[in-house]
Length: 136
Length: 130
Image (cartoon, rainbow over all chains, first blue to last red; front, side, top):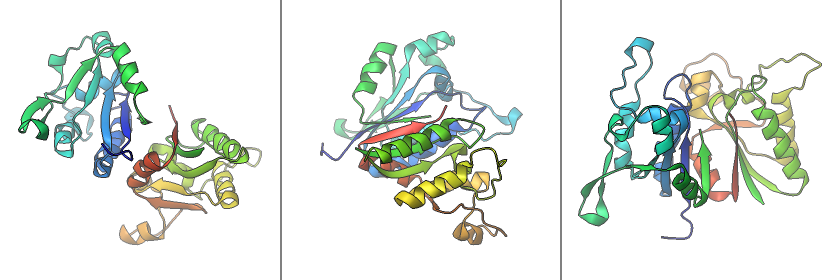
């Protein structure tokens, strides 16, 4: 990996609706994918709700942007860290989240899970490794 | 140190923009470089020249413009966020068929790539927001 590639982490801390932060964060991720950095996303606190499957926004007349997360694999955004404690505090498990996958070009295009559930302590270590943190 | 600044909140509603301004000013006075200030989310409202705060209050927009002029700062308003919130320059006015523009002096409207680039090129990206 060349030295001018930085480790970029997008930190998602808020529910998908109620404020625009989640959607506008995703817009940065999509644009940023063109810059060929080492990108990962972190979901913690209410941010874990962004990945919950079966979102239906018809009742609040807002755009349901959750299908966009399924396109992230095509943008080479393949590391989505979800904090275990944040899930548990909200009564959620991995089974409540959208199945998000990518095709691993280094492994004969095998389909792999993008979501990695990590503990709070592991999340702290992953954050420590980053060069740039975008907090939303 | 080469800093980039991201401002995520609008003026007056939230102190984030005040903190960002004070940080930027202090960093410049200490001899650091601010390679870009990027306004995102409601932060784009820092770049409207239609703001008219009471005379006994700070003028947040004018303050950014003056600091920008003094230090030749790159004050960038995100185009996607700006379009949603009605921050318009000459080009946006024409492209979107609007009859007015309101971009404040010293600000420019550009894309999110400018934020990502700021993250790549700066030594520290400092985010001000909630």
